[in-house]
Structure formats: C-alpha cells, structure tokens
Image (cartoon, rainbow, N blue to C red; front, side, top):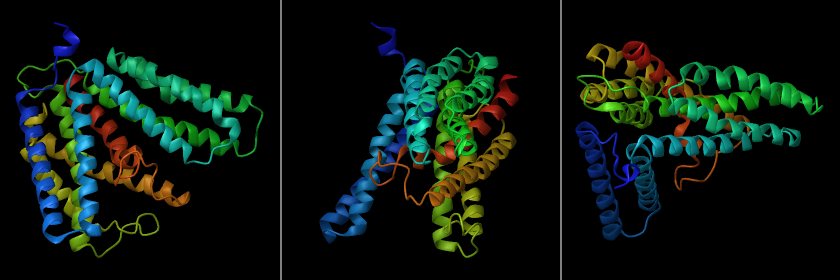
Length: 319
C-alpha cells in the first residue's frame, strides 16, 4: 500500500501514551460540562465552557492529524498554520495599501523556508528570512516610492514574517532531526513536549493568577498578568515537565533548564501580542477558532518557545 498513507513516523509508544491521556481528559471534561447543562439548564458559563471544549476537540484532532501522520503532511500542515498566523497578524497592523504586493512576497517565501526545514538545509534555513528576505522586502517596499510611514511598514512586515513563518518553521525542522539512539519517543515526542508545555504554562499562569494573583507585572500591557501567576505557572509547568521528561533526549537537569526558559520566553510571546492588540485596540487577532479568537491568539507563546526549544535541543543533542 501507499507508504504515504501508512507511515506514522511520530506515533511512538510514549507519544500515544501522552496523547491518550489528553484525549481522556478532554472526554471527561466534555461529559462534565454536558452533564452540568442537563442538570442545571442553560447558562452563559456552561455554554462558554462547552464552546471552548468543542474548540479544543477540533484543535486536538487537527494537531494529531497534522503533526503525527508523517513528516510530509506535518511540514505542509505547519506551513499552512504559519500562513494563517501571518495573515491574521499582518492584517491587523494597519499597513499601507502600497504594502500589499510586498506582503505577497512573504507568502511566496513560505514554501522555500519550509522546504529548507524539510531537507535539513540549515545554512539556507537560518538566513533566508532573517537576512535574504529582510534585504529583499526592504528594497521592495522602498521601490514603491511611497515614503509615508515607510519605516513602520518595513519594521512591521519583517517582524511579522519573523514571528510567524520563521518561528513556526522551527517546528517542522524539529520533525526532521535525525533519529537518536536510546531515545524511543522520537521527534514527535519532542514536538508534543514543546506544544504541551507551552500551552500548559499559559493555562497554569492564568489559573494561578486568578486564585493567587495580587501584584500585576505589566498592567499597562496585560492587566491580568501577575507575579504570583507567573511564578505559580512556572512551578506547575516545571513539575509537569519532570513527569514528561521521557519525551526529550536530554537528562533531567537540562529538561528543567529548558522548561524554565520556555516559561519565560512563552510569557514574553504572550505579552508581546497583548501589547500589539492593545495598540490596535483589538480583542483577538481573528475568529478562526470559536471561543479562542484567531490562530495567532493561540500561537503567540509558541512563536517564542519554538525558537528557544529548537536551538537548545540542537546545541545539546545534534551539534
């Protein structure tokens, strides 16, 4: 039979175990929320929780299919996610009409960047967007002859392509890492660890902030972020990472160091997008995920953690 249809490169025993636990948890939450609706009737809170649970089902199923079937589908799927994220971000930055054709070249860059990730062409991968596209997009913007707000356009366009296409291409590259001996979780395990830790850190920081938060960190950017939430989230995330250390090809000490760094830079990604949304007076970057906003609203932390994760793991294990 067709190899493409049968190949499940990333469904290792460890990945199946963790994914099974996640699906089980979502099933339990779904039953609880629907049972509460049947017993208590309609309520705004219950309906919101049900909507969010449906969204998590959709995201989890898409994530499972896109990432864990095989490397080809995973690379294409992540490229499409980066395209959607870039479109959401760039469309909310109030760019000039004269910047539209420059933006088209950003979309053209996507297959080149992800092909470099798929083929493990690191030298091209690491300079294509930060250097080659930086020079090209700058000159393309200037060539239009529209000098009004040109500095802002140059900065915004290149920052957007770095935050979305360049950042998320590192996920595809992780899936292309060569196999390591005595590490059975595989590349799928590493991706699962990265995404799970990034998302759990957001959840834990939010929860700890709600229950224990008193001292706001940056109220002018994100009023709900507190020192207690940040520290509590980091502690809970690090404890979870310790339990999931079998998904990484590094020892316990490096797992803890990596997790702490992911918590810090993930928080940075979150507040960076919060600052952008506050500047442009928008609540969400889009509406592609019901109850969760747009794709970029869910991937803001991952835009920062994916790069941190990639270079640390590459330095520790594949240099």
